[in-house]
Length: 469
Image 1 (spheres, helix red, strand yellow):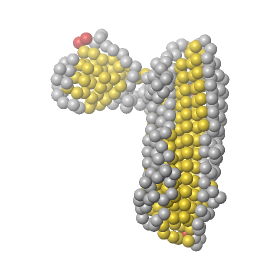
Image 2 (cartoon, helix red, strand yellow):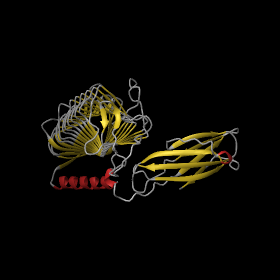
Image 3 (cartoon, helix red, strand yellow):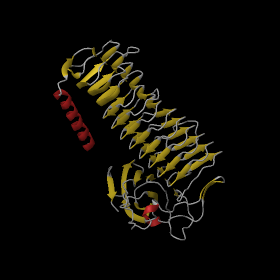
Image 4 (tube, one colour):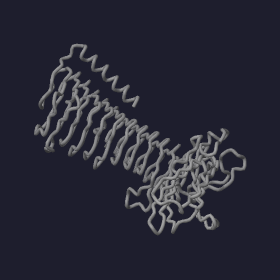
């Protein structure tokens, strides 16, 4: 919110400066071609226009303020909602909704800024950039065929604080180089790089949105979150994936027999480091890819962590990775196991971590705090109970890498079940008093437990029970 306020203030200053310098201030009420510098204000919606181009800007130093209004077309083939012409620069477009065109906005000008613009339901593409040095801030691209397309090897375009949502083919298509996507969110909108290099994606959240690089080199993905959103590299080399979190298994490609977090095919010399990869079923899958560096990552609650075929890669530098199924000893207490972690005969982590992050090896380690939330439903003949430990936390900010549940009748406690996931569901056949124990372990091996006495003899309606540990 603070960033949005700062950005809005900056734009108000810019706009005030433009008007103060004596630029022409004009109103726009219908489809038009702007051919003079100035500050233009859209006074009303332009609805169901059959124009080939609704608003065209063919001048330098133009501000178009939509004032929250909408320009809409009729899905006419090859129609454009707003177009800037090549050879011009310093154009600003703000506070506008563009929808129902073949292409929503097409930018040929350079140094163009788009701020607080919603581009919705355009048949072919929401925003098409075919020039350099443009900035898109605080805008939304939703339900287009392609949300944003940057191509013809154009560079130095930046998307910041944008929402790219439910675009059917791609949320973002890069056929270009040296562009940036920063502090944005993608939901149901894939990102595709083809023949693209030196692009940066940082501080961005992907939800159900695949990131795919094809024939693309020297790109950087940094400090991003991927939820049900795999990363695929195909014939792509020297890329960096750093400090990312990948979670919630999802079999995005039906031809893969396991859901994957990261997939490499015929890709070389990429680096995957400082990443957290977790959730049942998440793996790194590697085919015919060699010389990649994969180190200082944490893998937990995945079952099988890596599937590799016809590939030899490097799994450690001075440190390797944290694997939650590594059980060997660290006899000298340096945080690194003495025995390699074996992936297969050709792939071994020679310096597996027994704590993560290893930089905290000499810092105090407080115990994690287990929290049990219990919800249940009375099905007349049984109780359907959900035990949820997702609110458990670690006061030091470490990862909780293992959850173990033990539960059973108080008088028959030896019949317990241990499950190593955060949430479990049990069907209790009849009322009774039950004991529930949750044990959790953090990534620096601190362990803590909490106990809850579940009394199903007195409960007769749905409720939530919370034990803070």
